[in-house]
Image (cartoon, rainbow, N blue to C red; front, top):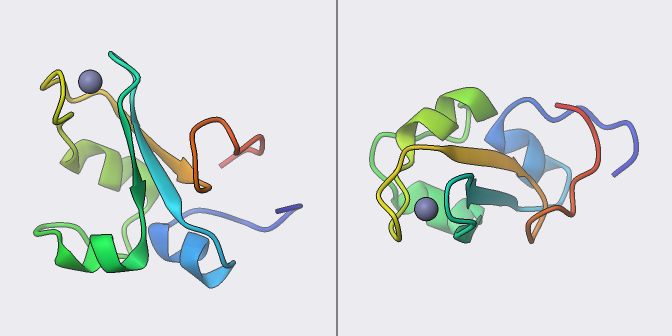
Length: 81
Ligand SMILES: [Zn+2]
């Protein structure tokens, strides 16, 4: 992914990847594709990652400690945001 800038969810899709939502409490994660995202209430592709993170509650442990980053699986993303 090089030096492309990723600031919003839409940046992921624009650069040809998906996003990953990972729970920092239990490690549960889900892929966040454009299709998935558009079905969700209260979240928009234009949201920056930090704003999207506030919207997610883990479906497994119920905590709100999500981290959102570009990629198709956890820890694929090595860059800065
Ligand atoms: Zn969790």
